[in-house]
Amino acid sequence: MTTPRVMKPNMQEVRTKLAALREQNHLTSRQMAGLIGVKRNAYAQWEYGYTQPGPKNARLLVDFWEEPLATLLAPAAIVRKGSRQEEIIIL
Image: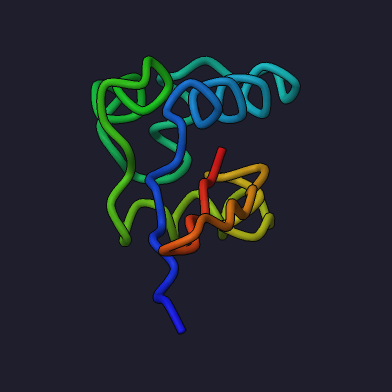
């Protein structure tokens, strides 16, 4: 049996999801950063796709939006089975 290989989330998808949630709730990035207790620059970098939130900050986002981490940071997953190994791609 092969071990699945997990790919990192597509940062464009993360960016789109975070920006969409914030904008739907009529919040600026500065307001959003203040609400979850991070610097505006850090939050903006997540939305621009330059970086992704670490475990602590990912938990802050999950708690704030009350959405599962998988939905918030990785909206879809595809499993590809090859002859040698299985690959899970989180989109």
